[in-house]
Length: 106
Image 1 (cartoon, helix red, strand yellow):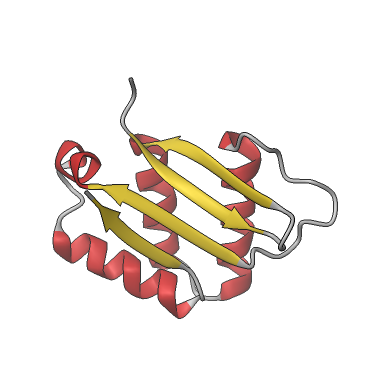
Image 2 (cartoon, rainbow, N blue to C red):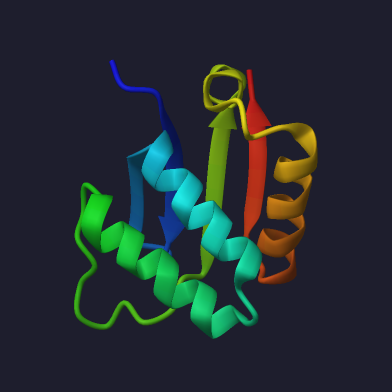
């Protein structure tokens, strides 16, 4: 089984998409989030990820991500290696600044 990050996006009370993004791809996305300069740009990047890797493709009208929760398992962190605490802390700061959350689970 491929190690992955589980990503949950909430478009509205009735539009929730939960999916797995392989670590290599997720690292690219998280790295891009670190460089994000605004919420609008981050939303576009996340919508693209949902569209490419989500179990539910982005639907017409899905122009705003209400909530993004990236759940990173400790196993995934260890597997990725480069995702040390400092990196995760930086990602978390960017996510929270844009209204998203990132958490590490057991």
